[in-house]
Image (cartoon, rainbow, N blue to C red; front, side):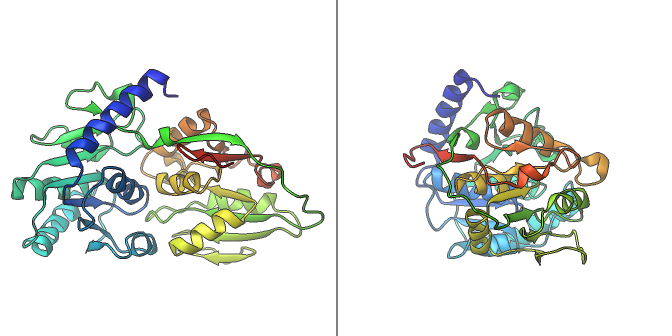
Amino acid sequence: MSSEGDRTESAGGAAELAAALRGKRALLVASTGGHLAQIVRWSERFGLRPDSVFATFDSEQSRSLLRGRDVVTLDYVPPRGLKPAFRAAVRLHRETRRERFDVVLSTGAAVGISAYAIGQLRRLPVVYIESVSRFDGPSATGRILEKLPRIQRYSQHAGWADRPGWRLGPSLLDDYTAVPAPDRAPRGEDGRRVFVSLGTIKPFRFDALVDAVRKQLRPGDTVTWQLGVTTRDDLPGNVNQELRAEEFDRLLTDSDVFVTHSGVGTLLRALELGVRPVVVPRLAARGEHVDDHQLQVARELAGRGLVALRSPDELASEDLDPADVVIRRSGDTSA
């Protein structure tokens, strides 16, 4: 868990980076999911020009989150997909060759390689902010980029920011604190309203979380599922593969409990809306992701009191009861 000294240094890095980027027109390149959620937040926090251009993949999330913004839609680049990343760079260059930018900014994942290529081709400054999910060192993309010249690399965590070629930058996690929830009226005999989200990362299923939640449902509970590629035909309630951002937000705030994987984009949105989720991380050993960075994310947020961390075997029916903790964002005096 971050110390107060680490947070002070991180705030200094945020101010320095914001001062350098404020008012710039940027090309912002990121995968969908947590990477896109983070880069949108950085664009707002750094005060980038509103005509900056986002480059990402087509999804319900990107269409909703980037509505009204300038967007270049790229073909999907899978994790560690270097060849697709270079093909994406060619398309990105072709689509933006008449545009003028001051800086290229990326949060990854593999499409961050495309961002670097464009920056070098256009002779533009390139800034790479490693995902907040990387607590013990850079991602595969970050490790590639640290070997390349003419790029500014920032970590969101002090634990490895002294790695050669990296600096400590801002951290999105420092925006949030957990506080007791206001008293709720008793629900009587009504069932619980449960929202479950598995994210949309391809091609990884997450049946362990689905089965764990289903096992703990009580008669009268209502449940909405967002399954991504985890296709199922045996589930009660409302089943969706993807959800529009507006519907996702409504479910987050209207449900009694939110159960989810440890995807950064999903968690940041829950925290933003004041919701403390129950988190079950995907694990590589079960074939649910390429590595165990989701477990690192969940442990850090649990240490800050921002999530309830569970494994599929640990999830209990009581975890689906209404939360007794809510999240407050810095500067918000409500709750």
